[in-house]
Image (cartoon, rainbow, N blue to C red):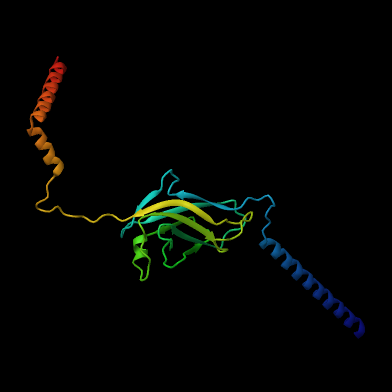
Length: 218
């Protein structure tokens, strides 16, 4: 009787252990399958389409000033694998420098991988200690994911983007007119009217206007 009970308990433990191992392996395999992404061999490489500023034939111009903000917007296309993060910079060929684009400072700026826009104030960025001043020039917007700016182009993954040219400038400061300032163009015009040729032109113009007025009255 004791031997039969022992055998039954042994069989129960074996079944429980087998079922536990089988369930654990199955669940693990199922979980891995859920987390993996199947990318077709024909999948196109992921890309970025800039939505703001709108694409135009010429570059957009932005003012470097205290309360001037720039918004860059985009759509991510043909993605099977969502980026974990995005790095956005502005590259300037005129001075060979790159600038972090976004609300934080540094040589690179990293934002969420599902972000579709970034707001930037170049003037505020420039106030940071050690920041490189902006050149009044044309810049190229560059965006890449956590794999870096030289990542290999792969179907379903975001390809590094470089495009979206824009220009920045500094507004000229106000210069008051000096007390002895004279309008040289105005002075020249008045001098011309004082000459015989100028008087003749003025007289002809007045006669023409008077004649047209009489015709319109009829």
